[in-house]
Image 1 (cartoon, rainbow over the protein chains, first blue to last red):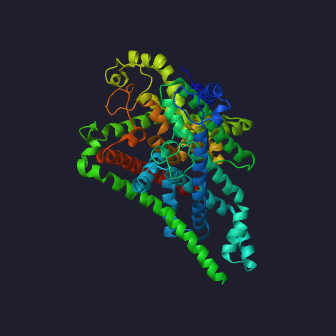
Image 2 (cartoon, rainbow over the protein chains, first blue to last red):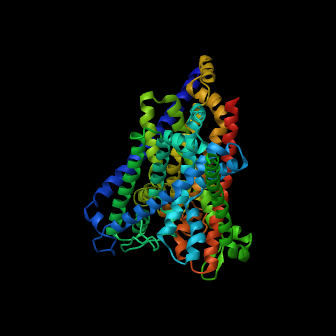
Image 3 (cartoon, helix red, strand yellow):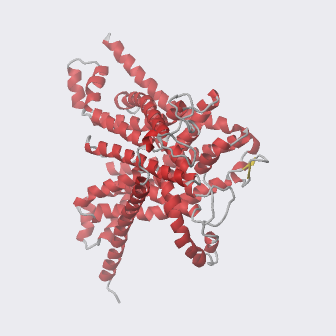
Length: 281
Length: 307
């Protein structure tokens, strides 16, 4: 019979091996996904991908209109969401503290952060698309902005709270009014952190498909009109991957490689240039 | 003069705080308004009905609600032990120089857009799973007396089980990150005391770390569950999209998010759209409730930590 000690050591080595296996398995899957993406995606990377727009199956096409659409909608979403979130985050950190409004908003912000993105698309559809009677790139941007807002609200508040109170008191002692303390001192001190939050929010919405499906819809033609339906990379990839055509599958893989590359690039910029640890949420 | 600017600035920030608060309330109101026709037509019966017939205008949410729960539970059954293993590896086993690269790798896994998981699932994972694993499952497990019913059916590759597995890969990095963080706050003094008594690493993990971090681990599981419920694109690729409820996990199914993604733009008729919006409302309520409980748990943990 095994002694109690041998038995414990035996169980210990088994469980620790299993833990190592779990780590190795997840790395293996990561490698598998990235290698398939590279192999399938690189085969379709040509100049025409960036110069042609989406075409009918059989006709050589590219993803130019989808890239432009993603760029426009992501750009406007960040432009709309960031100021709102910055101001709300400022209130939470500098004025709100534990007031009812601040506590409620913090909680609602977390709910918004965890809300399924498809529900946000549904909300914008009900709020905007139904009332203007047509799909539009604006609607897509609104839906994406709803994802940007909670991320930036949270980073702004956290970054402002990292600024030591002694700095606030030092500036206040010089007779500076509070709004100047916030905009001239605290915002400047914490701009790297806030920029990190904005970049991470951009990375997150760059790959979002669900909120665009019934807001911006899709558009097989070249369009830069924000008031019309617009193509975007994720939606075109979804449409092409689900289609039965081989040339569309190829474009979908190449598009998938491009957006993954873009999202990872944003993450690397955050990490290397700003030397920040991206928070998982 | 300066005092006025101060008041105005404060007022502006307050307005936008109210705006953020209002977004959430507006989401709730508009989803309820959008689903009113369906709520009026089917009432509470909507949640238990398995009908889904756009022609005869009969809609029921049971297949998608069950599908959402099933895929998410499969994801948890696979994801929780693996996340636990990863967190254990990162806190107790990993050499220091390896911790940073491993952290980056997990962030990469979390950062890959969900549509990529969907494509990979459809084109790479599902064919391999359908030709190698599923036939074995239905041959060996399909004959079991009670459990067997879950593993019967043709090896299609896609289906509820496949969707659950893809979901598990997507939620592992999030759960592992939270678990690692809560394991890291266990005081070294406690662990070292146990080691000094001759405990093995596993003994320490099981008898010291887990009881101490219990609440945090539960919070992380709820966080993962919430993500699994709401995940749309990865599931839409591989779940099969059928409103026919089947006991077998190898058969195609549907989830709320995936049904919305596939059917909403093609839904003609007020009742069809309203039924889909009602599904969205159900999803929103479930994920919000989950978040509420996970926050509650993690807050409790923070209190313990403060003591």
